[in-house]
Length: 322
Image 1 (spheres, one colour):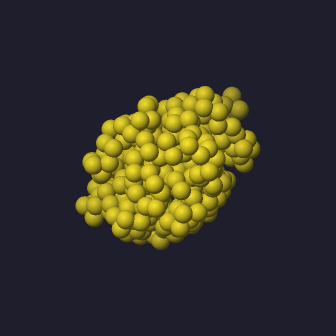
Image 2: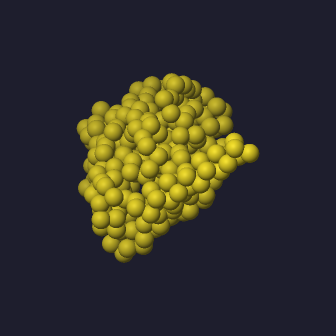
Image 3: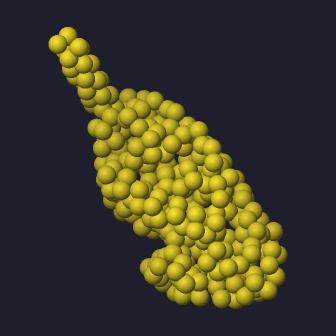
């Protein structure tokens, strides 16, 4: 009986403590960890929401860029943080869905150590090449790559990120031999793409559309199954002749597992409020993002579905853990 009493007392104390944390949350500055370099759409999205959080919570929200290893460095920081909601992760497709397969050794488990808060948005990528490359369509690019196996390279913002795996999927389904050149962020990759050091890339619309409009880059296709309202005149990669191709990137918020549910709910609610502001919606559209604002349960289910989709595909097409 005494054991039961002690157990009940501890449980009640824990609930009261969690409730107290949520009731007073936040009382000090918050940290929003972005596992990628400044300047990309993931970083820009984080800063847009962070600004609204600062106003809503009355506390400064500091964006902390910790780039490298496909977002794993940033994710590990949050996975080892206190479960109190003061350290939030800008969660991405790779970190939450498939990096645990692509990397043979990770210091954290996305499934066990991180809790889903909300999916912020879904965003397609576009296949881009320098304007100097003699390929004006997906079909021509595939023919060019097949004519000279191993000559052409594709850049990405890091191993295991969306810009990497979408290109690997293209490489496999198109049956071409192109060489992967990973960078520590999309900014460095874009500089080398513009100069012709790498010849192919899959990138988010916000990071590349200005260069496409200026004529320095050429957009050949979009990664969605159907044409996007964001770029309705751009054909899908499947339309370009790579049958079955479909891939989208997404982002959202996650926190350390064990964070009080009331804190998670508050973060989700304030994110949805921020995304409903016309100014924010316009900025997100400009980044090529379709707003989502899902519940924690919906986001967690989406993550599980993405794991079920990508990992068997990686095995099938021969992408090996590194």
